Image 1: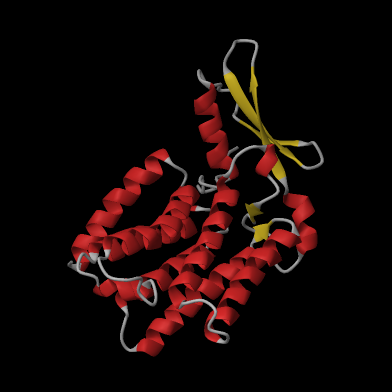
Image 2 (image 1 turned 135 degrees about the vertical axis):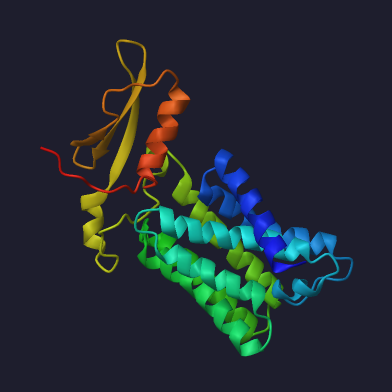
Length: 260
């Protein structure tokens, strides 16, 4: 399959998916399902690694879903406030897709992708320590079990690691107060200082006004209202929730203008 055709298909499919499902959840789907789809479509036995499926007969099942994943990582890094690290991870995934020889170069891209995701979980996630270090520790144990002890094949090590990475993105995308404890850090927060987290925790509230329109407000952890929908109101609850979720995820990244 030609590289330009892969990019075109990935762009169209990725754009269609993101229109209906938040970007992080699409990444979860790609991380979890791509290796399983390759396994089931390839007629032979389970290969030694996910990367080995680039040589399968119908290798579009290797290139297209992972190209979609790489595109979503990069777009997430560009459009989400403070998520710059995701375009680095997306670039590493592109390297994994396109560079299979020499092997050392391929391994470098793999280390950047998997170790980079571990770093994101530890330092760029506003989550309790048991989750941040727990996810990272499991991936670390999998690496040791694969490389040193030979307990797992590389395919299983990569797949389980992708499951954990998918869980990270899924938790980061879930809306509402119930899941507010697991969020990536917004722009301007020093990831090396966990003490800063208490200052930036925010949550959204949906409510119905007297005119029966839906509205939202954003509150800081101390109860102070830091933002509202500007009193414009929404006819449907789903429209208000959609806009609130986009604001909380940092999708609006416009310029600041001084007026008056």
